[in-house]
Image (cartoon, rainbow, N blue to C red; front, side, top):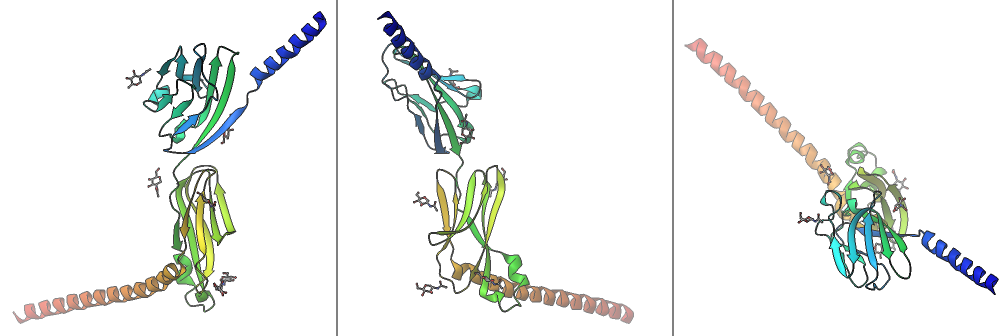
Length: 265
Ligand SMILES: *[C@@H]1O[C@H](CO)[C@@H](O)[C@H](O)[C@H]1NC(C)=O
Ligand SMILES: *[C@@H]1O[C@H](CO)[C@@H](O)[C@H](O)[C@H]1NC(C)=O
Ligand SMILES: *[C@@H]1O[C@H](CO)[C@@H](O)[C@H](O)[C@H]1NC(C)=O
Ligand SMILES: *[C@@H]1O[C@H](CO)[C@@H](O)[C@H](O)[C@H]1NC(C)=O
Ligand SMILES: *[C@@H]1O[C@H](CO)[C@@H](O)[C@H](O)[C@H]1NC(C)=O
Ligand SMILES: *[C@@H]1O[C@H](CO)[C@@H](O)[C@H](O)[C@H]1NC(C)=O
């Protein structure tokens, strides 16, 4: 009998040990500017004490003790006026989140039925701007003489100041090509070659694990600006040349006139 008790106690003790040791980290992904709530999934009793800590150094940012909520500003006032704590559940809400808020949040629940620890790994992604589709003008001028390439239009889809994104070209719902960056990148571009008479079903999409932004490709609009630029570039050059010639002729005429009138005097 005593033996059975000891065994029961021992297994209960083991479960208890494992329960505390289970450092499961819950991954939370969100966009910059949104609000995020880290749920305790418990109902707090008056005997519970709840602590929220942030970062590698475990800076205390929120405390619920004896039904009283205390909020702290974090290192260098990082969380000033942006924290809310539900006093019934102890869940922490961070409003208007920033990429700097990414990191580990540790929840400590003290009191009955035993101390518990929960960890949240928050990743905040920066805003996604709509990608920019431009005609690759270098292709434009160099290949204008070749007849086969006149059927084609070289395009470039770009995004600026991004990190942890994938940039892709789609035709309808099928993926044509893509490129990814994990670090901060000043600009990211992906080329695409289309034919003039192709149907307008192309789009360029930038996405991170949370959200995406897309830009529809208007072939008839983009692929004709090239020939216009080409035409107007030539016209402009001709006008400039004409002006330079006119000014030159006028200057020579003036000098000649000046010399003649001096000689006459
Ligand atoms: C947090 O910052 C506010 C505003 O600067 C200040 O009034 C308050 O005392 C600070 N709280 C703590 C706990 O440092
Ligand atoms: C938190 O998540 C990021 C990516 O979302 C990952 O790189 C990092 O290793 C995670 N940290 C921990 C402690 O799990
Ligand atoms: C034109 O584009 C098509 C694909 O859209 C490609 O197969 C072809 O080789 C291109 N032609 C030239 C001259 O670049
Ligand atoms: C990218 O960021 C740099 C500095 O951080 C800024 O000067 C530049 O204007 C930004 N570019 C765009 C397209 O937002
Ligand atoms: C464009 O779409 C029409 C019908 O929607 C189809 O018959 C034609 O083959 C398509 N052209 C190309 C180049 O995909
Ligand atoms: C972009 O996001 C929407 C939902 O916001 C989703 O329906 C769509 O499939 C996504 N597109 C891509 C290419 O990931």
